[in-house]
Length: 306
Image 1: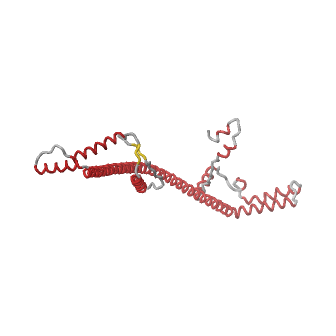
Image 2 (image 1 turned 60 degrees about the vertical axis):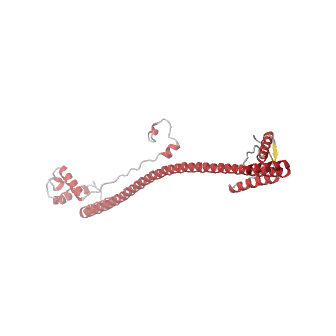
Image 3 (image 1 turned 45 degrees about the horizontal axis):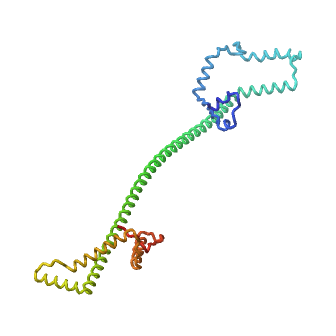
């Protein structure tokens, strides 16, 4: 309900309502009269006035008859004290004479002066009203520009939000891609490390087998004789059913397989050299990945797997 209508309730309006209500400003402007409007008004007044005969009191007689008529009537009135010529009446008569003289001689000039002053006041008031109207128009234009600016800022905010969402989605995809790439790289490094470890284990196993077979061939006379017979048969082109070197290698690998199966699920103690190599590789990997603050440790006993 509007604040004006609240005054018709039984209860008086609250202080909050009085503070919120702003009385409308009513501006009244008197339209200045032009010479044409004044002439038209005078013509209308003369048209509505009944025609007068003129002369003394509208009787048509010459106004000069007023002098003898005044003397004839004034003498008995004064002699019979019907009208007392005191100082007050004389002053009143002088004032009336002065007023009539001023009105008859300078009335038009006074009227024109007052009308010009009134016209100047009305023109000044109109000019101020025009300035107020122009100021209000400028204020309205300013508010329109502010509303347009708010709409532009709102559109920019929407565009900014959309851009942030796109950047966030792109950044998320980039992080996901980088994470996948990093995981893939680390897995490849693990596969490579595993392949290197497997290759190194094979190399060490072959070297150990070679050393073991060489030692057995050096110390065993029967093995030397069997190897010599194999060489002679090969030179002669005869078939040999037994290869002592091959048998020694087969025996070595068979024993290694049996030892590995027997030790499955048990712990094996690493040598100091192997443990140092593992720790060095782990430290290099952590330094490469920027994980120097992580404390690295590795057990000296590891379980054997099948």
